[in-house]
Amino acid sequence: MSAPVLERITIEPTTSATCTVIWLHGLGDSGAGFAPIVPVLNLPSDHSIRFIFPHAPEQAVTVNQGMVMRSWYDIKNMDIAGRADMEGVLESEKAVKALIQEQIDSGIPANKIVLVGFSQGGVMSLFTGLRYPETLAGIIGLSCYLASGLEIPADSSDANKATPILQNHGLMDDVVPVQAGISANEVLKAAGYNTQWKAYHMPHSVLPQQLSDISNWLVRYLS
Image (cartoon, rainbow, N blue to C red; front, top):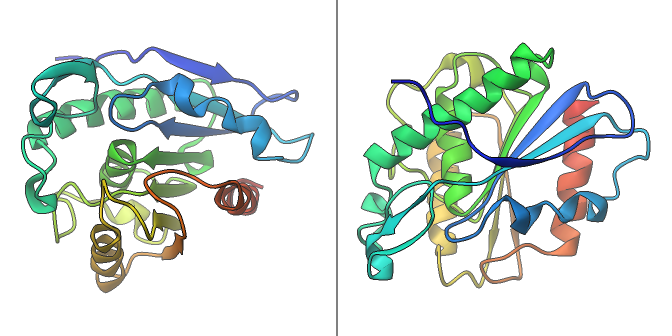
């Protein structure tokens, strides 16, 4: 069965694109929620990064009384170890991998592609990136956890063992407790992944200073 084609917002650089950032939103949001951050990143005016902000499919979410909303996977309970419905995670992984393949087919190599995600989107960026069979430029997981709980996802690929991974979290996060992010970071570090951790004084959100730090990180690994 072919992967679903995700609707998305694409923001092209003023020069010809040589690299791509795929940014996955959180539960109940859409690509439009993060698309406005591109100018806020204050990237160099001659940067060549294409930004893609896909929209998750709409589906019923159990913990939200079965309401239909944009979601990368169902959440059946709030226990971090079992929060991600793996059937939905695997389905969304196919869609994200199809997005990556689109970029490769357009001439952007895998090692010039960064996966970024916030909350549910961060869960997907980590899961997809750790299992992706080709080396990516980087993986960013914001305010999130590992879909597989306290272990590396099954069938993870050695291709991204040395890929830079950035993990950020809010110290006052009441949606995804900061300990969930810390635990994910510890699991990755123990497995030998190249991960960097930074916590900010914020709730379940992003901060201007954090976006500035992300901008510097993107310039470093996509230049």
